[in-house]
Length: 83
Image (cartoon, rainbow, N blue to C red; front, side, top):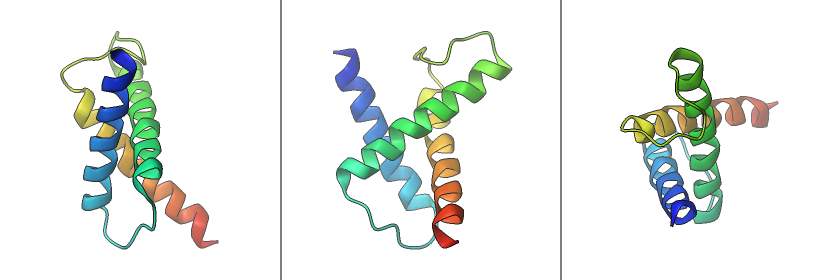
């Protein structure tokens, strides 16, 4: 059940990040889910640096960290894709 929850959380975080970032991102649902999963890892890594939690721990701020991490991944991917 944990993997399914992680995938759904990644999809929701990816959808919200794509809605927040301006411009058109040409990706489907699977790519959006992968974006959210990457954002979850980035957000979890940043939270692990600041707090005493582990990267893969699920906590109350996990969705916010996932969204912020997905936004960072979108911006970095957009910068790399432009060159």
